[in-house]
Image (cartoon, rainbow, N blue to C red; front, side):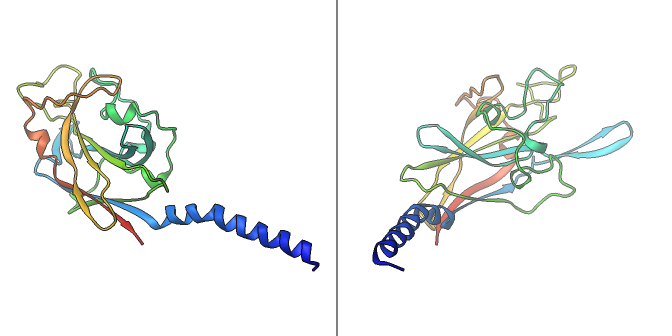
Length: 216
């Protein structure tokens, strides 16, 4: 190999390494979101002589600190695209649904709406994009038949109390942060309110939710 050709080859290899280096950083940064089911996590219902256990719908997603959607980490609605024809709400998770996620979602981020038994802990893992910008994790949860005085039983309505929105900034590597309850959403367009007046059992769908970022 002549000297000029050797130099071109060496430059090509170095350039490729520089391009791949940020991708390597992205693969090494991971995020773990954990949630403990609370005492209102599930309810047993009888329909057409069949007894079923109704568990909540959940969505976990990543945003930038200024509110730009990045990706869905997990959503319990099958393929993230079920239509709910009953009730006044177009979707049980209106905030997540407003983020415009491209459908269908891969199996890696979707799951069954109802699990066969009560889990001790829910856990989801995701890679973090290689970026200097801070990220925020949001979690939205809603369970059918969660009625109370503020959201009573109505004809053709299965959604009682509205979905609840939790949020926390992604901490630095190895640190743990608790997702805090920020508000409720029972309207359209993904709008939510910080007012939690009248919310009772819905607060107990999840007992504790945390996130941890690990950079290897």
